[in-house]
Image 1 (spheres, rainbow, N blue to C red):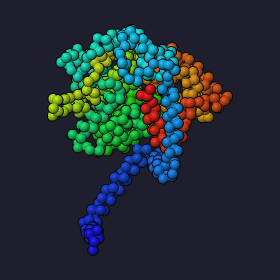
Image 2: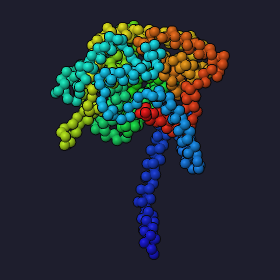
Image 3: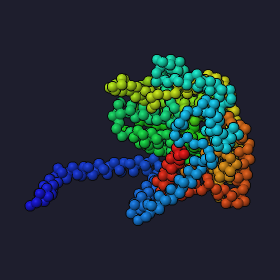
Length: 544
């Protein structure tokens, strides 16, 4: 008998023993239990119909992937088409005028200050979007020339500062602490409340997820963490899932109100759940979730409850005094709310790159921190993701907050809300359009009614130099109203009426780039193709 035959015989003898068979059966049962539990949870949360559709999509993606690998030339054909799409994107993104100066390497001799300023002027004039017309959704939260001048002065004074070294820059440390304190008071935090300044809403949300993940691991031994979130929650949570290994359980929204279905949230909570979250308002549709109901659930299960107030951060706290009270509070007055994120660089009119993540208590924030005590370079600690940070951004943020003050933010809220309500009412009066849910803050989302295509409407608006946000699942358009929108609301409604009228007369009138891109994206079952094209866009951002 050969050595291989002896080995095979030994394995056969060993596996024939009863305890080995029992072990195999136990492993199989665990496998079945885990998958059966996952299927049961999906059915409970999404309902049988939606669960089946999700699994069909998943199976279809697997089949498409296998087909691309198994059929000779299929994968090459797909890659060729993707390359064509990416090339088309690059032509639009990477634009140069013949003879234009391009800096591919360091200049052999440095430019003089006058020459640098001349080059800065050239770069500043690139592009043809006049954002001051107010035809841009969100993106530019301009608080006026006076505050811009103040921020520029703050930048100049604190250009070299770094909050990583508070002993060298005590003024920046103080301003950062005061920014956190001011925002905590805006959101009625208890005396135990605390927070940190971050680089934006995405980092604030990442920090909240990291804190709850680590807290659940330390206090409850959770090793397979999950977070239960509305399907409309910001995509930064998807990034947190990718970065930190925290599984997302997405909950559908109510088709009428646009709010997350709280009953389905309740069914999705299990021993691995570390946090819930709701938006005030959400980015896609401007809807405020039922924060008190979500917070009550979180408190019952002793888990974190985060309120994503990044978008509405400096509008929500002032709505009541501005004459537009919400149905229910969305701050720390709600029992069960344990953290809130607020973007100062949106309606707070601070410079881009500043946000605040707040916690009800220091016990939670402690799990956000990174600390290492054994590095040869010394004890190292940082409150957020970054180590070194620009103190100039902190100074600019502080300057904006103290310049506006409560009265200034109440006035800006009144003006922005008046504009949003005008657009909301105007959309409702246009036959062929409908609102998505009932937006009550600064974002107004709407869609076209069949047979009119939403993306066709978006296409015609883009030809009139509107830069609105195009949504999917379902198709819709939204505008995040800013101070600049005050002067363009009437023009938007007029252009909407004209666009709908054009499409009624000629259904092909809106067949352009926007309709082609989003229409194609919606119809392509292989989502890896969409992802590859999107990566091509990201690549184009650093091409010269």
